[in-house]
Image (tube, rainbow, N blue to C red; front, side, top):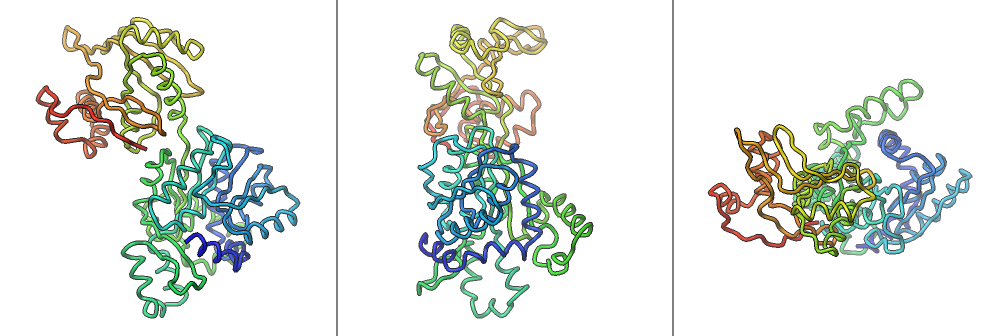
Length: 436
C-alpha cells in the first residue's frame, strides 16, 4: 500500500497543489483553524504528510519554522520549488508517517497530520500514526488531523461522474460497507484511501491519548457545490468564509462534507503524571490517582483540569518533600464544610496537582472515610500508573450529585464490580489493564 500511495503522488505532484484552488473553502476554513489554534510564530511545526507543501509554504510565509515530511519525493521536490518562489525557507524530509523516529520526543510546537490518516487502511496504522505524531509534539501543543468522510466519494461521484456508480459499483459498495478503497489488483496508479465515518474520528484521537478540542467540517455548507462560491471575491468571499467557519463545528454538517479536521492537543497532564508516578515508585511511596485523571486513564474522553492523588498520611508529606520546588500550598490538615484531609497543592508546568490523605466526608454530625479503596495498575505511555476503579469513581459521582459525570462513566463500568461495590463488597480483584 505504501508504494501505491507513493506512486500516486509521484505521478502528478502538482495535482494536490492546485486542488486547493478548486476547493477554496476547505483551504480557507483550515487556515482559520490554524490561525485559531497554532502558537505564535516562529514556532517549530511538523507538516507530516503535507504533500507538495501548500500549507507548509503558507506557514513559512508567516514566520513559522516548518519541516515538511512526506512519502513522495515528487511532492517534496515541488514543495521546494514553491518555497523558493515564495522566498521562504522550508526543510523537506522524505519518510513514512508510521515512523517518525528521526525526530525527538517533544521536538515540535505543533504537528499537522492532514494527509496520512486517509491513506492508512487499517485502524492500527491510523492509531500508530497518531501516536507517533503525539510523541514528537510538545506537551500542550496542538495537532491537526484530517480525515476524508465516509460518503465523500459518493458525493463527488454524484457531482461529477454519476455513471461511475454503476461501472465501478464494487468500489463504491466497499466504501459504504468498510470505508476502504485499497490499491488496484492490476497495479495501476489509483487513489487509495480510508473514508472515515464522522462518529469514529474523535474517539480515534481520544484513544491515541489526545484531548480533542473540536471537529470541523472544512467545506461547510458549500460541500460539492463550490462552483459559484469559487468565483466570489472581496467581501462576498469573506462573508462565505466566515459563515462556513462559524458552522464548521456543527455535527449536523459532518456527514455531508468531504473532509473533517480534528483539532486536538497533547495533554500536559499526561507528561506531568508520568513524572510524578515514576518518582513516587522510585521512592517507594504508595499512591492512587483519583477523580477526572483516573477516568481519563481508563479511556474516557475527558479533558483533565487537574490531577488528584491520594496517599497515606506520611506519603502526602513525603510527596511534599519530593516535589518541594513544585509546591503552591504546603501539605497540612485542612477542613471544609464537606471534606477534611491532609491536603496540599502543586504545579507541574501549568498542571495543578492536588494531594490528599485520610480524606473524610461529612455525614450529618459526623465524618466518614471516603478515600479510594480499590485500584488498578494501568499503562500511561508505557509507564505504570495506579488509578482508582472506574466503578468506585462512578458511585462517588452519584453520591455527590454529579450525574452527568456518572452517566459518562456507566457505559464503561464492569457490571460485576459495580454490583459488588453496591453490595458493600468486591467480587473481582483489581486487575492490571493496559490502556493507551
